[in-house]
Image (cartoon, rainbow, N blue to C red; front, side, top):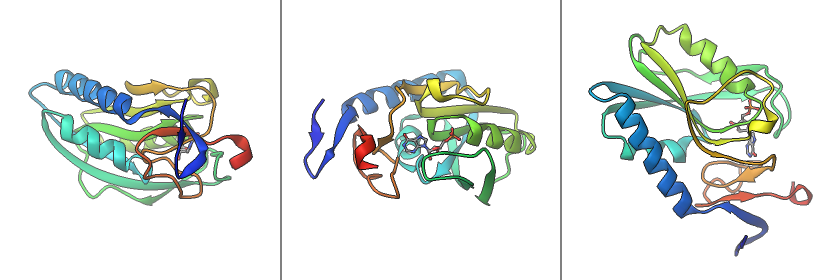
Length: 181
Ligand code: IMP
């Protein structure tokens, strides 16, 4: 593992090349699964913005996207399961093939809340795409249909993911060691 030159506390876990390859594979899978149909991608701000913009450009379907914003009550690194919706969708979800796009599935509490919320919008179908899956941390029974990488229980930043709003712009997914948190 090499470190990031301007942020030596970080170690690269998933390189930009690995991400590019995997995002293209996910997009190909989505394009095949919804062949002949249209999809609506719903990105969860801010972490999913970069993943969504790369994914959307590789999907070979009639595609629209929108963003929602949530905040969870709890610390920066721990979600409590109590989620507040700060910004709702602008588009109607009724009878649409909706794919919720998240940066990372950790405990699953955020997506459990969002799944329920979106099912109330009567979509035709609802699936989840998560770039990263910290499967060992899951407490809520939520699964993503499209997963980029299953990762160990480490705090990661980059490619949209932050620590106190920093590091979102890093092109690689990096580990932030506990002594730097
Ligand atoms: P969950 O509700 O526990 O699944 O939390 C998901 C949210 O927690 C993600 O959307 C991230 O905002 C945040 N999160 C969880 N793990 C990490 C991490 O390793 N790095 C950065 N953010 C994380």
